[in-house]
Length: 499
Image 1 (cartoon, rainbow, N blue to C red):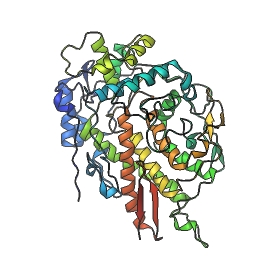
Image 2: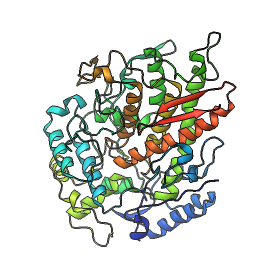
Image 3: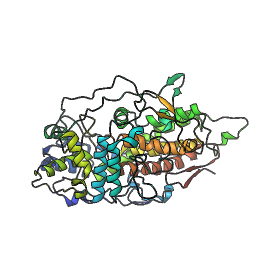
Image 4: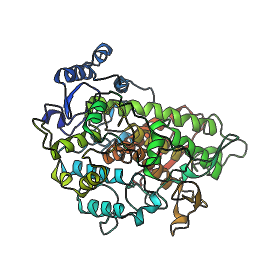
C-alpha cells in the first residue's frame, strides 16, 4: 500500500477562533465568528467519524451540512480517497502534486483569487463575446495583470486579456469561443433532439449584500428569497447562465451531453480501441456506447468520495462568501477580536472598490439566495467530476479529432452562429474537453462566487488522477486486449493497457 501526506495551509491551527475555517450552517455568534461550543461539536464529529457525533453537531438553522460522512466511504475501483495527498501520484501517472495545500487566508494568492471573484461578479451578466468591448473587463484585466500571484492564463508578455479572462490554462482552453463546443452544439438523446438551450436566471438579481441576510445564510436560515427564472431558453453565453446551469445539474450531466454531441459529430473512437480495426465485431457492453455512457456516471460517483474526504477531513477551506464577510467587517471597522486578516492587495484593490460602487456593499454578491452549498470549498465536486469524466472520454474517443463547423453563441444567447476566428480549424476534442471542464467548474465556482480558482484547477487534476487509477482497474476486466493512449491535462501521454 502507498501512503500520501496531507498538507494544509495551516489556517485551522493559526486562527483559533476558526475565522479562516469552513463553519457555514454550524451555529454562528456573529459575522465571521462561529459559536465555540457548536464548533467543538463539529470538530468532534470530524475527528471521531462516528455517525452519532455527526447527529450531535449544533447547527444554526434548518439547513443541514452536505454529506460529510461521504468522505469516509471506500471504493473497490480506483485509488482510495486517503491515498491522494499533497504529493505527485506516480502510480496514477501524475508527476504533479495532486492535492496541494490551497493558499493561506492572509496570503497575496488568497487576495488575488478574491479580487478575481469580485471582478467576475461584476461581469456575471456580460456575454463572453462582449468582454473585448467591456470597460469592466478591461479594468479586471489591468488589475489581474498587475498581481504577480494571479494563476490564470496570460499572453507571452504577461498580460491578462479579455480573451483570456476567467479561462483555464490547460491545452486548448484559450482557443476559440469561451464556451466549449461540446455543450452548445445541438445533438440527440436517442430520438429526442437536444437544442442545448437552458433555463437561466434574470439578470441583475444578486443576493447576500447586507449583514442581516448574510448572517442568516451563514447560520443556515432561509432568507425567504428565491431565484427568478428567465422565461426564455438560451444557449450558455454568460456567467449567470453557467451559474444557473451548475446550481441544479446532475454532476456528470455536461459530460454525458458531450458524449451525445461527440456521437452527433461522428468523433471516432480512440485508435487503441480494438473495434476500430475489427472486421467482424463492434463494441457494445464493453468499449461501446453502453459502456461509455455508464462509465461516465460510475466514475463520477466514485471520485466524489475522494474529494469529500479532502474537503471535510483535511482542508476545511471556507467559501469565498465568508471572505466577503471579513471584507465588510474590515471596511466598516467592525473586525474586533476576529483573528483572520485579508491581504492588503485585496483590501486596496479596484475590484473591491468597483463592487462597492456597483452594489453599495462590501460583501461578495451571490447569484443564489442561499449562497454556497453547505460543504467546504476545497477541492470542488464539480471540478473532480470534470477531471474524471473528460479523462474517461479521452480514453474512449480520439482526442485529436478536429471539430468541424464550430459555433459561437450570440451575445443574447438566443442562437448560435458559425465561429470564424483564425483558430476555427484548431479546435480539437481534447481542447474542448479541457475547456468544458473549466466551463462547468468555473460556472459553479468563480462565476457564482462560491469557489476559488484554485479549487477548480487542483480538483480537475485530482479528478484526472482518480480516473486514471479507475481505468487501470477497469481495463483488467475486459476480455479484449488493448493499449490506449490519451493526452493528459499537462500535455503528456497516459497509457492504459491490459497487455
